Amino acid sequence: MIVRPIVAHLPTTKYLNINWPVIACDQYSAQPAYWHALRTTIGAAPSTLKLVVPEADLLRYSPAELAAAEDECAREAQRYIDDGTLRALPCGYILVKRLTRDIERWGLVAGVDLEAYDYRPGNNRPIRSTEETIQERIAPRSAIRAQSPIESPHILLLADDPDDRIFAPVRTAADAGELELIYDLPLYTESAAGDLVSGRTIGLTDGETSITGWLIPAEHTLAAEIERALQLLPRWQSDGFMLAVGDGNHSLAAAQAHWFRLRDTLGERAPQTARYAAVEITNLHDPGLRFLPIHRLVKDIPPFPAYKKFNAGALEIVRKWGWELEIGPTVPLSKPGDLPQLTQDDTSVRLLQILPGAYALWTLRNTGAALHVEIVDRFIAELSEPEQVDYIHGDEALLSLVNSTEEPAVCGFALPPFARKSFFADLATHGVFPRKSFSLGEAEEKRYYLETRRIDI
Image (spheres, rainbow, N blue to C red):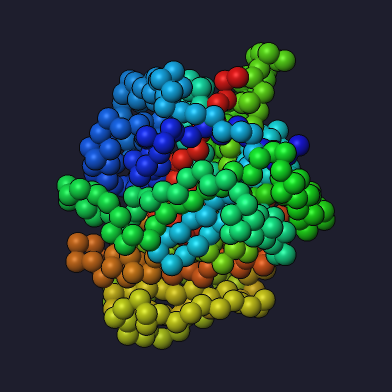
């Protein structure tokens, strides 16, 4: 069974509050002050923060410090089990509603078989990675999992469910009050991050960011409907592709690595709970799921008129590859709202080159089946060094960095969003997308650690 119900654990009512769920460990990786202030605010209260090592810390920890942090995560997890902080729920699925300002998104917490997953490009497993997997990022996560008796997922899997077979019936049941409400919590948000970094007490500033969960017991008829709907997914029926990893691929890869070690060393004695990983499944077509492009910032390229040297190099390179590149005139630009919407067709790829106070439209033709992300990464790699390239979320941030007085000699490339309709088909064709191809919303829209599950029994 690829997707199955789980026995989730939640804190007792006393501790099930805003302090318990926290953002995924790979967020705010360039802002260690955020994580420091979050620890200060939460203090000694039970929290999933005590169960993870933020990536912001990985960059500054020595090997000994990292090992100590991993040990402390495992001890805290065991403490939550031993002192009754965590309580087991009946086996089932958890229906989740995320509200971020005016954006509503639905998800389903379930277990997935790690034997059905593969992150290698070109595989034909039912669960596949969407982006390149960096081996070095697997080991720290796997080490924590190997020591901990529990997991807390931030993995988000995408189902190509255009007819909404999975979620329509369970949403109706939740709205009708037919399912048990198990949590309804506010969340610390990105808007609170400024308060964190400045040292003020954090809290919800808009009052509209929350997460709500309902239990769907394994024996409920809706559980069988969910499992039937998964079997009817078009891509699963056509080519055995059920779910794509939208977020948390390295955590899923770490869970698989841990399971393979147990399986290969313990054989039948390996705890079968470790064969499965808790995830949240969401519909690729959910209007509350935002597919945002991740822009490119290329540093150390002089501004007007010297940027033309970069452009001349790009023109020469694409001709060598047999492509065509048309660079439009520079257009004055003062705010993100002035940027035109990028549209794509079957004959060309369009990008926006962002310059200090201006932009220019790039149109490329004869690029074959290459994705727009592959195209821009390819010519940037030819004309710059890896350390000159940054990956930027959001138009406003990109414009701000291009116009920065601290590093004025830069240009950026604004990329179009991925097309949802062809997402699974493109993934099947290309194997995996280039790293930093897309983002599923801003940080506060992503999966938070909340539910936990035993993986040692």
